[in-house]
Image (cartoon, rainbow over all chains, first blue to last red; front, side):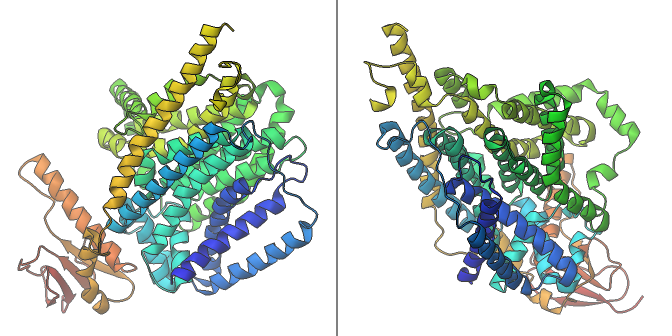
Length: 478
Length: 149
């Protein structure tokens, strides 16, 4: 059974990595394996979830799906072999690639120690609470059980008779859990654990590898270290909710937008991959829809000085990647999902009354400030203060901060926070309870992307040290 | 840049890096503590234990369809706080029963032919109004089956 579960991971990851390598533009300066592997793991998992859903529509949740995936992998591997024979893999030249840099060695060491400790805590917490937390039994894994146990009647998973289980929520996570059971041949608590571990540690890998490819290893390791050290990120990863997987796809969108600006001059593939990642986010949670809109708004905002033609080209490329997932999500909402419980109870009168109540704005604003300031709190302090101090210490790279994608990403994050703000103000019945139970999770979804954005624009220790030679030698050599 | 300015800039960088390392260190200590709390046996958690209560009843329920649900405690209380606590407990038990018995759909109603009773262990629940056959699975789990109008 463990071998079958391992196979389920290897097959989706290998398919994702190979497909990504096939799509990787030939003229892009870099094709780094760490980044390909991290991105490919998420894209592969997303592809598997989508394929299983389509497979279920065609033949139901049957074990034949595993064979179909093996066939797909063989096809992709063969294509990759034929087309990739003449391709070489370049590695990026980062500012800290000099081996033996004492700072880099220190960071590698600290990162590995923290990674090992975080993995131990993750596994121990999952062993203590193998069913995760409340929403896992109420929604994500309940739905996976209904699909897997339901057989031909798997559509019961979306029954409107139990609206409290949110049957309108998209099904990437339940599909992946059910897929792991189809591979294993039976239900096992290792299935949801594997899905949670894939996205939790896959997000760390993507932050590190993305920044390593674009800004250098020290920057990647510092961001990865902070992510691994964010208590809520690791603990929530074990709750078996969908917020960490959603955060992975938000991050993947940002990484692909950054790659598009750096290497996408002659190709739209990175922009399309950004759209695909945002689309997979829509297949994880409804919040993904708002994120896709926020990204589109961010691109419009950031490219406004380039003229409409350039903006339209970029939007069309992102939209082309997004479109297949948008079709899938809309079809799911029309054909399978009952009406959303939050939207279906809305009335114009009540919504207007809420929108015109100043105290609701004050409560949401106060909670936003409190939750952001205290986010990632551990015994040392909040990570927000650590980042503020770090920014003051190292300063901002003017080259990076002036990039279009940075403006687009920042605008997208602001729009997303503003969108959630208005959802809280206009829709929430029990406002304090809802803010208390969901605001930290919403911030967690954005946290990997925010960290990536931060370490893209903040100067690397080497860049900062170049301006402050100590005794005639750079800081890193001391 | 003058020598004092360079020295100040270097100090700033070192302090910033040190802050990140201290933050990471504080979390690493917590992770090590959590990692050391490794349970000797798996499956002893609250949800797994609660789920085992339904193993026997699951084998006699229809494999699919809708089954009624009668839960305990009643979602009422003398004060709003007590009522809220009872309501949360009632709902938690209901959704854990649903989680255990999926793909059967549980609805809080006595209209279906089968009605699952999920009570505190040791209680003697009375059936809903009408004619019902009752089968007690122990530990507060009871299955009612409609035997007449």
